[in-house]
Length: 153
Image (cartoon, rainbow, N blue to C red; front, side):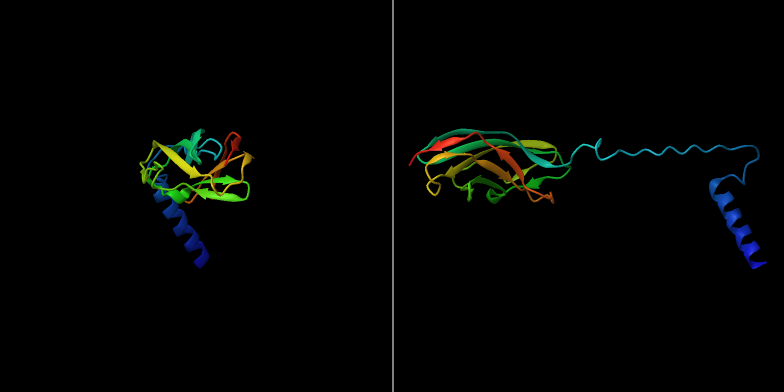
């Protein structure tokens, strides 16, 4: 008997919530489930584009790139977020000679100019890789392979 009352109460509540018990006639409810799969959703990340070597002068390799912030929040950038890997060596661009914005506003782009001293890198043909790891919670660093360069000391 208790189970019948409980089920009856639940049915009455369900009818009241859905609106089926309060109107005479037939009521039809259409529920459309809309979702975007991860392959269709735009990537909300901060990334580098258009990275290129501008030249080498006085033992300094200059690289330019554009930081694209496709997120809804500004992203703080510091010199250590941008590194150049050549073989086993990883170089940080000195803030004193580079042009690195301290922040990239939401949904915008900023150009960076990076100067990397090559005095600790052996002479010869090298394949530099620009690494970018902003503090946005992205899982891994972005790697951009640059054209080969011949270093002379």
